Structure formats: C-alpha cells, structure tokens
Length: 145
Image 1 (cartoon, rainbow, N blue to C red):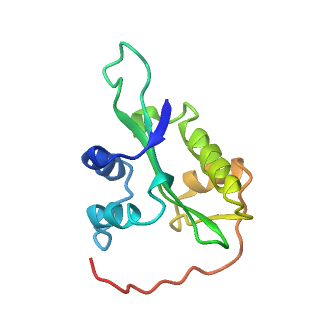
Image 2: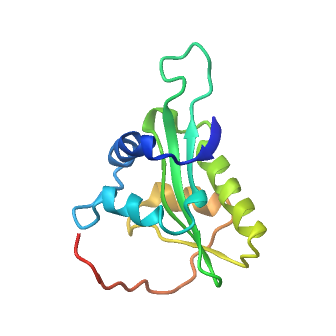
C-alpha cells in the first residue's frame, strides 16, 4: 500500500470505503465532512492505494484517514481499511503515518474516539499502545447536516 494525500477525485472511493467499513452515520454527511476537512490541514487527509501490480484492486483506494492538530492535541478520524484488505498491516501503517505527521508538527499527544462496543477496534488500538483516557466524550452539534 502506498500512502498519499487525498485528492478531490478520491471522494466517491473514500466515501464507499467509509460505508463498507461502517463509519458513515446519518448525522454525518460524508461529503460535508470531506469538504470541511479540505479547509483545514488538507495535507493531513491521507489515502492508501493498493500498489500490488496485476491485482484487480491495483490503484484502488483501500485505506483512508483524517488527521488533525489543533495546537494542543492531535486527532485521527475516519480511519478505515477496506474489509478485504484487513490483516495486512494497513491500519498499523496508517497510524504510524499519523504519528509521524503529528510529531513533525510538535504534537505532544494523539487522541481518537472509538464507538462503544467496538471491541475489535479497541483491541487494534490497544495493540498499538493506546490506552483508555478514562474520560467521557461529550458533543453538541453546531451545524446540522
């Protein structure tokens, strides 16, 4: 898998990836989320492209993530690996790249959120050294999608 910055021509493929990974929710319009990300640190929106020559999926987007840094904490959102490409280290590669990018920006800590009950994803992040912060995540929608 080769990593590169997101390009607007990737939009439909990334949304399909997010849908196949169960990340899209009715209250989050993925087109609007992409448009918003492209206004803030667009270089931290990363896609992974299948680089295996001769494969049916060669050149296809098989992974993606949005990374951000607000000057205090880094965040990873919408990290997804296509179901048929899981188990090959792509998620680990994405997280290593997120950490590398954030360290280069001087970010002292990376935060991420996992939906309650998603034990497989929690186990993935714990294997990478992430630990529960024992905080409660609160949210308030400011703009309805």
